[in-house]
Image (cartoon, rainbow, N blue to C red; front, side):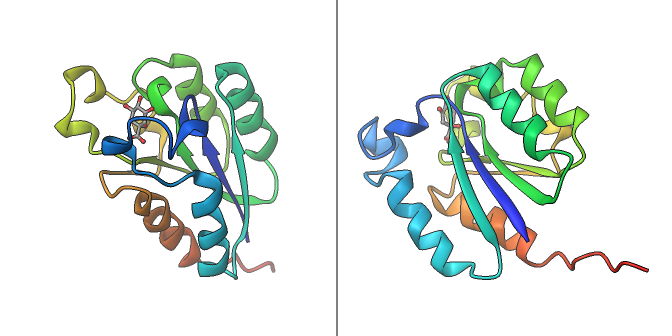
Length: 146
Ligand code: DQA
């Protein structure tokens, strides 16, 4: 089962950026652990700091054989009508994830533009937010044909 983990702006700096909020581990390092933990999932990972590139990626994987997308849209979560529209447009279910508990932070982080079009949202568990989202997809039974 193909699953994409999609990270938005500034998440390439995990392990370097605001360590007290986001931890001291790079996503690449954590991704290796996830691949080992979910051998039944065909995991791929993509990161971009650019809104349009993230939209192109959602379009690319959103109609085909990918069964799920785990998406941390970073700050675009709180601002992007275009990403919200892209998630609404595609067929593949998206789970919104955040490393930090956005509801315990500044008021502008309490609003998610993308949440209404996501299957669900997970926030505040550190990098383990991604693992929790993958557990949901892992438990989905493949659709029977015929
Ligand atoms: C974040 C939370 C956002 O508010 C912030 O802009 C990020 C990271 C998180 O994973 O906690 O870049 O999405």
